Length: 377
Image (cartoon, rainbow, N blue to C red; front, side, top):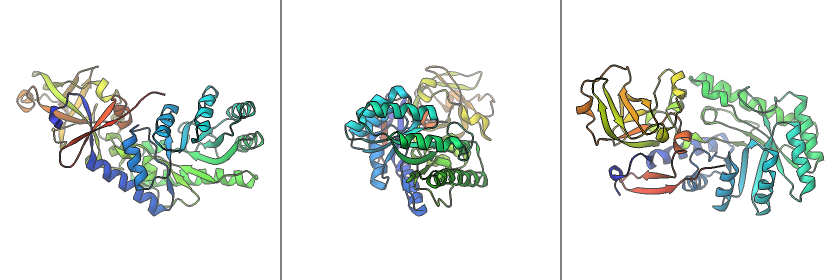
């Protein structure tokens, strides 16, 4: 099937851009002398993870136990589940470990550590655990200077768990927009996570892993001394939000949504398409950046951006295409006749990808492959 004959809406992956993005990140990790553990939550696609592995990624990161099951079944053995473990999920962890998965979990509270220890005593599985560190006040984790860090470490070690080290995610890097700010948060992420690891070692506790990462900091760090591995995810596709942060260009965005013009509101200068928020997601994260991209940047059917046009509004199955400046376009019906095929670049690739069971991978020669994608927790 040709690209323009696909039923719309459809998720399109530009294989050339994807390959370039994967190679760029792996080359950067190699140059910085750290292991790379990509986060597979963005694509949730075995084909893409295998490409990361072929380039040199030594392990993967997941955000759900469904991902852990799917990727372990596909042959990926070393997996970090990078969400603080809920005690109710420990039996599922046991099951994966019992089947041979080298699954690592994280914790950021003494209560969480105690729950892991209690489960360890009731079962035969020795859990492998990292402590999550808060290096920027963005979300979760233990501050590296807190006494609680050592309390958690001692509780895990004394309870028979395998304490593997520390990990952090500098999510506040998503609020940056200059190279200087990105380098500063990358340095802060590194310094504070390394500090936490050193405190564990000084207390006689093991810390073989110091894991940091986000796409912005991974692409902005200049020195990762003391870090053993880096995690990043959205870089595989990039998106408009990452372009606004400044770590990619529009021409690096590998994921788009294929859509068809189905009507017009000529007096308002709108074209109506068959991709609404069910196809692109409700994410409006670029509205707080210097350039508001609405619900997505409109491209022609070949993926070339039409800079004056964005998806200005979205209902469940309808998208509204209009001028970025809000001015009515009296020629909209002639510019975008009914049946016109367009592509829309998303604000947030993770959220947009989550709307689809598969990707249509577009090769350089114009041929298509179908890559399955999965969802769920």
